Length: 143
Length: 295
View 1 (cartoon, rainbow over the protein chains, first blue to last red):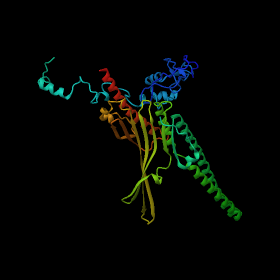
View 2: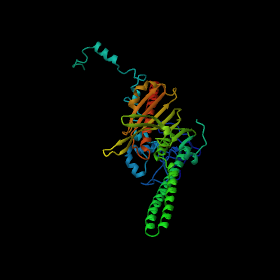
View 3: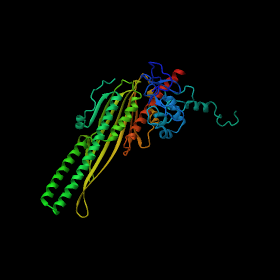
View 4: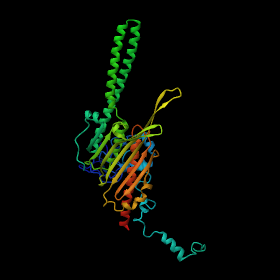
């Protein structure tokens, strides 16, 4: 599969970490190197490029580089033009579950009891604001 | 790791039980499911062939009787009997093959799900698969029966799919899919005094997943119990029936409306979304831990 693609070191392990549900190291041997990032990838994680638009047939992309293409394009168009499988395990979350893997301030990881930000306001803070400075809310002249 | 079970698809045994059960790696299971697909395709073609032969024999028998009446009665009757016997043989052959004409979406859906699960399993990990291809209204699947008004009601529960294994992070999973069927029937007397038999069916499909992660890897998981419901994302043709985070176990159950696509894609999509929903919670629990360390 590496014909025409970047050189692959003998005995290289697959360097892809993409999964369906979570990221993890791949335990398979690499069979090719990604055309874009040169990462060694196994057959499971390699996507053969189409050979259209100046691409050399036989070259492969790793999941991450392929995913970058998907995020830039409309998946339905990719379906039509490249036979892209939107139910592929490695693209499933990106294409079907909104905000998968997002654990920023608006995520549930910030709304749990155990993980609450100790510096954030709580209901008790609201009470103390009223008690300590009853006019604070009404003081329109405060800067 | 589940010990491998060497049994691949034994056509004769499968024809007898209509059940596929094996503990093996995803690649072997997918290979077996491909074999089942081929068995099904072969049976479908044989059912069609013997159906055509049967129809041809019936038509020929009628033609032989008609021709016999016009030309020679004895020869006509003899030929008609021959064709009638042919039709009976064809019917018998058709019935034999029809038993192996299994529901496509059951193996197609399983193929889709196994392919997804395999992406997060170690290459040498096994999974336990059990697929029942038997009819949903088989007698042993009847859960209860009663009379409601004028109707005789029979309820059937067909838990036809079970998949269990372990992901590479140590989380144990179980996927189940069942078909629940209700059959109603009654005899009705029409205005002319004739007795007419009326029957109707309704059914629902229930998808369920269970994730049991290693407690040591997700110590913050119990704190997310209340957030589980809002994390679940399902397609519009599925409805969340139950969501529970009990200790270190996540259980999700969803109703899948009947009429799901023949290729089983709809049902496997529901299961995929349930798994992603469960892992969204697990990954959030991990993120809490990381945030705690960073702070």
